[in-house]
Length: 332
Image (tube, rainbow, N blue to C red; front, side, top):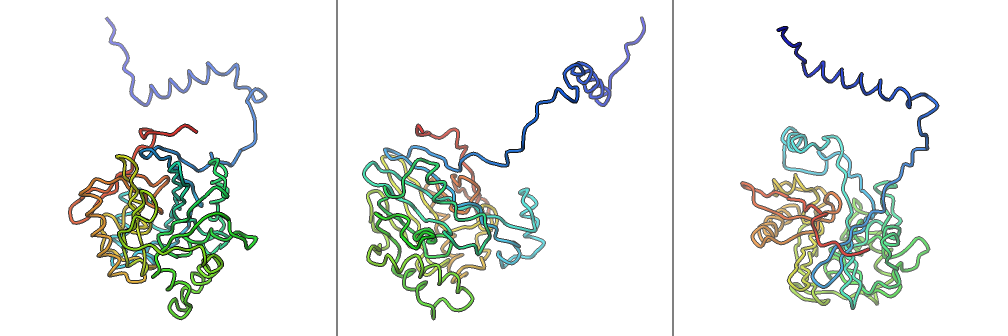
């Protein structure tokens, strides 16, 4: 009996391609292909899920191009930083941050946590999308009861006042730490390096000063929302522990701007920190707490939609994104 001819993987692939083309030859004539314009659009950027008895929606203010990561993340050699990025399939030449804004509907109140860049184009044209994505998510700005801010940086308080100079949320009360309000609305304290940050705070916070309430450390200042002071990134940076029924979510603001660099090596310093040493110590303390308690987090600057957990990894930590399709998704 003659020995059957063997097929290599390459020949099989070639055969399959040839057979496929032959079989499709009758329908793949130049005039038979379906044609249409490139759409160049994405789906609306919001994600909705249940948090206890509340409904949570994450909307986006758009991506924020941070630029060269070597200039932003300090206290680590260029080679080590490049290795960390490369090992996580991230580019070494440019860092891009998300802006994940939480909208919490408790049934009695609609609360928004942080509010993006607003009209400022300091980081380009990809920011300032909050009002658009809020509308796409089916939420009317006039129905918002509270704007809660982790701190008064340019990308967290910029959406309070609209392009028309009027409050974007006409019926909302504002909540922020007194330390951050006082610091970022004082030009002498801010200094010339962060003039744009000062101007953003003045434009968005001073016109609504009579509607601002200062929370205290540890205070449950809204039902189910507790403030936890976490200074370093700014003098009054605050994260929020949100409780609804048996579910808890930690909205961590700028405890970490990066899901790899500042998590795996939390003592790396960030160029925009007011006190980098204090920020690093605070970061370790908070990440330790979140890991020990297995608390779900929402990272403002983490890859969309920023939901996950923190776990211990050697001398540092690791961010574990949640597979959002497994979450209890609220009907839209």
